[in-house]
Length: 145
Image (cartoon, rainbow, N blue to C red; front, top):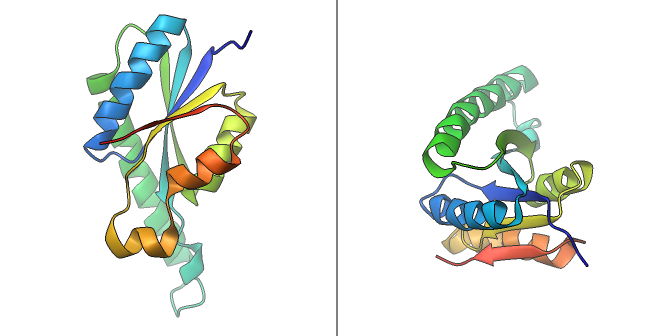
């Protein structure tokens, strides 16, 4: 029988993230599983060739990650209790980073929202949730708004 002892909660810190956290807490507590909350800061590496010095981009990404780490601490305090939870801020392309983290950390299940990007962004970049559902080798639970 499959065992779920290590759950990833992938968030984007939108208001939908609290709902995703609620389901993650419920499952984590019910299954006595540890939870890793993951946020992926966007990669700006595609702008390196646009007359922007690489050090400026690296500094900006560093500031985004530092801000996201502070937001992560607050998010965990506000949305989780009574279970083992750690937070991790990554940088890069969200779907790719989430799948790599899941593999590296022996995650048994991913829980995430179905909506992050809206409008033209979703058309241009696609759905992170859709990419993960299609590519993951483990169960993915998606939460609709």
